[in-house]
Image 1: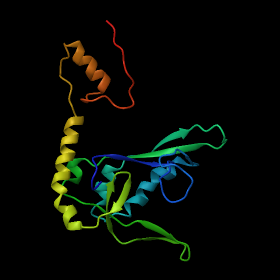
Image 2 (image 1 turned 135 degrees about the vertical axis):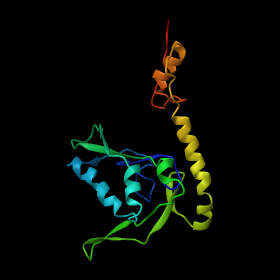
Image 3 (image 1 turned 180 degrees about the vertical axis):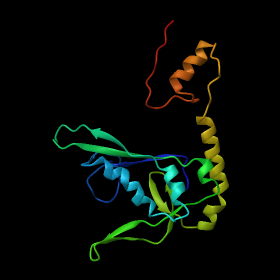
Length: 190
């Protein structure tokens, strides 16, 4: 939320940490017994943010989506849980968000929050912000990038589509100027 215009958190997709034996981005899936637990987890995530930011964070984090993983060598139902993060400019303009990451203390048998830290996304990694004043100076540039990205993605359809070419473009792209990666080539014949 401090840097990007949007993103998705995937649970059940491996990261390139340490010597785990997995490749970065490898889909492993996780067992999901009760989907409601993941929906309720958003309440728990909010506790990691300052009380003044909680409502804004709630507006930026979407409901989890469950994508079942098809695995030929397992009888267990595994899922990739996707959570969309969409920090709209109208919500996050001129703001930075710090988070207190939770750690489970086995001796005390409870979760303890770390000290508030500002994070940013750099490539495929999330890292703490080293120079906070320098990071804050670039906040207006970040907001301008978000406004531009939102304007590009919110291409609106004309009221009357007399031109069938424009109408086809609107139907295929869903009102955007670009075609989504998930779409395949389309052959249109007359």
